[in-house]
Length: 246
Image (cartoon, rainbow, N blue to C red; front, top):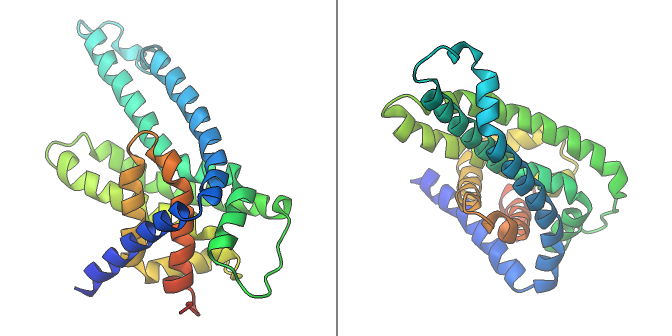
């Protein structure tokens, strides 16, 4: 029961983030800028992938040239390639948006979660570290999601267990990404952040799975990105910080 309560508490922090940006419209518009830029990049990339998926399928399957049913097979491969690209886009959108909008979200996180006596670091100093940490997190994501994607083609298991595990994995790593700035501002390095989130797994999953499921809906990820950053900052401040605020 405690795990369920913690899971719901994590989801609640995302709702609090939505409420915070709803009451601070200027900050919502401010946080929307990098999300719109990242979305435009992803849309262009997915359009390119969709229009070239069949050509890529032909390139990947030269062994099927003599098959009588090669066209149908390559259509299935093309669909799988596009769906794989779409899944990768969903998983990486937050990391790319945070990398593009590092100075924006640093300011937004600080507005939601002010720390007494905090000294602002210039964004050009924090950006290389943020990019490095995002690449490490992406590596972990791919380590889990690539096998899960392959298991998705297994009958029954691929349509029941795999989606649940995929949402849990993606949700946890979304929480890792979204809490990075608030935890970094408390002097926590990457390994410390991972350990803290693993120690609060149910809360981290509640927050991240809620964000992940909503981000699957087109355009929602753009509109709610500032709320996700705000919610992560509130969760760190009131739940995850070694010295939570009252």
